[in-house]
Length: 173
Image (cartoon, rainbow, N blue to C red; front, top):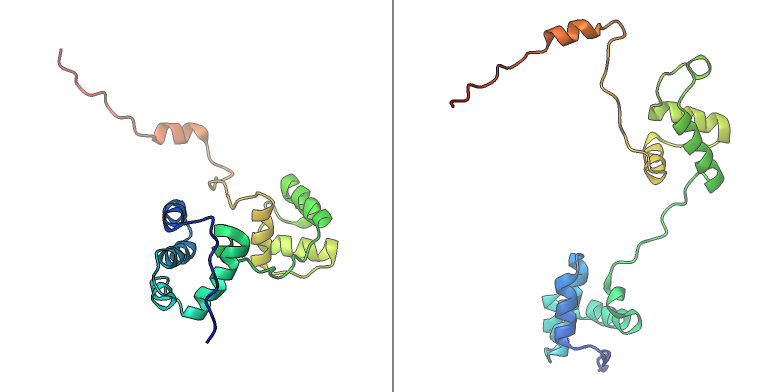
């Protein structure tokens, strides 16, 4: 039967509970509390139950904790799929969005995602989805905003006359 992996000696249960109190990641909190239970002398099986895991998983987290401190108890983000546009193309896309469409050239008065998909395919030769456009625009710091619709023939005087004016309330003296 194998022996348990020792925990770092520069932490104690109260340290881990203090870190867990300030932490915002629920998974990391569970792992910190399970390790705090181990520091307090609880057996590894029961400590793993506190953290909602099995004993082998707790052992893996002990290794991560010993190597990377409490920051190692967070879920590592995967590399994910690489972006279809490189940095240079992203900068050009930013300029395209910032300057806006040209009605004579593109035939549109404002950018929609479907229009940007077409522009990206024409300019860069990259086929991407509308969802990818959403992610690219968010990465560039653009948000999905649209102005309030305005009829081109509306008259400001008619609008002003239509507005209701409320009477001033009677103030007793």
